[in-house]
Image (cartoon, rainbow, N blue to C red; front, side, top):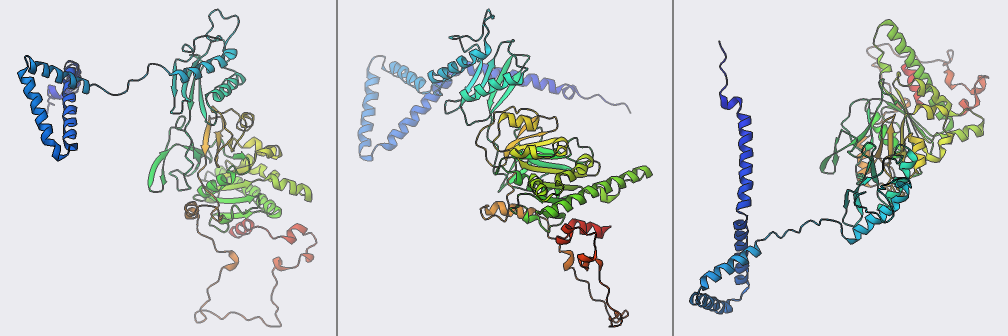
Length: 565
């Protein structure tokens, strides 16, 4: 059956509709221009009528008769005067045209006197950096015209610069970080302190765009984020360099916020993270947020070097293998983590050689979270023991194929005390709290494109994943729910995310066996003494036992995994 062609109006109807729409829009614009005087007079008549009605409503009733007599007298006089009606109509049309004019304030063609003075002072401050004695036609010179150097500018309600485009000569060394830093520091100081500025350098066009960044939201509480396994939300940033947003719940409202997502796992290029900051900057909050997200799909071992009980809410929870705050327990937990990493590597390698998929016990992620590990370095040196940071070498070097992730948080002043494997293998970096430009560049490996400020809220800082750009970061509010100073709403948000508690192994009860179905249990007699477990024997019976292990038992992770084996 031959296919019938579509009607012409359906085949090219869209083009005809577009042309018709364009013609209608052009005709409407032309009619508006032609009928603009009539539209203005009509608007004025409507305003005059509204004013007359208001005047009549405001007049007391006892005076309305006199007002009507006065209006009738005026109408009679106008009717009797030669050319009176014509003059009255002309006067009414003029009044209507005046009342119907566009009263919207016209945009100023240029800045006012104070704004011009601010731009001129900024121009004069840039002259020593953007001028050269050999330039025959200098763009920057003392007493020069600033309007050629600043083609675009904008001011906020307080009279401070909110956006500025700066032209600079081609011989300026915009490829050097030090030269850029000097210009950025000068512009931030002259434009107004206490704000964060974003700088965009256009090296091809010899232009610098300066913009004021809005403060990041600090009222986002911990919650379930819409992510896939292997993705961890470190915090939230500006929408300038992030193409993704997450739906978040804030009270009864919902909004989309751009996140900083850290990807871990077998294909991650930055499998471990290092977070540094000043005291009270929010590094413990970041670790709690990561722990709550990691417990959805993996197991967690926490090392608390602060000793303030910041992670007490996670003790005994499902998936939390240990929360250690003592040197002996930390050492035993990290030794087990190194052994577990080696076991996973061997099991996965054997499965690969046999052509089988990796075992299930090697696929479940294992997270090792350390808060202030340098505190145990000093304790170990005092007691003559090995530094616990040295036990992180195996998880850091070989943790990615074994699904083992290490997160280290410490103070910014203690960076030199971190071991070489920690500094070398943590390619994801976070800096929270106030920090200088040199400190940010030394930790992140690149300077941020914004100006750091002195006062920052908790959890506010910068993040860089591998060789990517430097992002502003605001960690979601994840406080300690057992702290009395924490608001109730934030406490409930954190408690709702905690997994249920796991009953201890010593508290498990064995159900009684039905005596009618099986043989009765043997009763020990005096002739046959009960056997004593090896673990219950005194440490003096084992001459090769270490004193530290005899004084403090091994942590829960070792015991649990020994049972699983």
